[in-house]
Image (cartoon, rainbow, N blue to C red):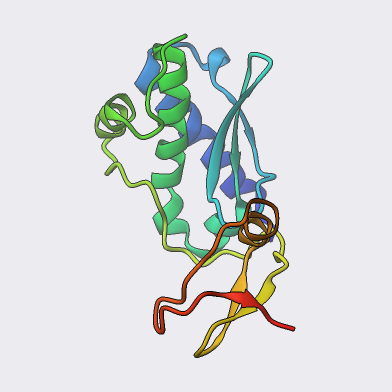
Amino acid sequence: MNLDPESRDRICRRTRSFYIEATGRPASCTPQVLFDLRGRAAGQFRVHRGHMAIRFNPEAFVCDWDTHFPDTIAHEVAHAAVHALYPGRRVRPHGAEWQAIMGHLGVAPRVRHATPLTPARRQRTYAYICDCTQHALSPQRHALIRNKGYRYQCRQCRGWLRPAE
């Protein structure tokens, strides 16, 4: 989904102003803003080799502008600000420092959004059965069963899941 240039510019300006407000650092220190995120996440803060970037999912802003502007922007800027203000310290991603910055920016410290976004990819599932129904297990659970001998029970009938044949 495409986000018009004016909306992208507004997001970039708000990102810059939030970052300056949260850190007190000059605009030249603001993380790079990208609009290349896909999947269910609305935003993401990343540091790679000392280079900070905030990635946004354009679909989130197209689908529900009022929810994501400014909340998602503040959320990701708060992560960037924690990284800048507490260098070398191990802090929880949505811990007290992050929450304090969100409060300083005047945005409720919410961790999740409710906008239905298109998944980045469909994940293969594996068919398993119990005594009452069929279940679709993720590749991770399937691998745990096959490689490590894990066992799972149905929540309804309490029967053990076994591969559907």
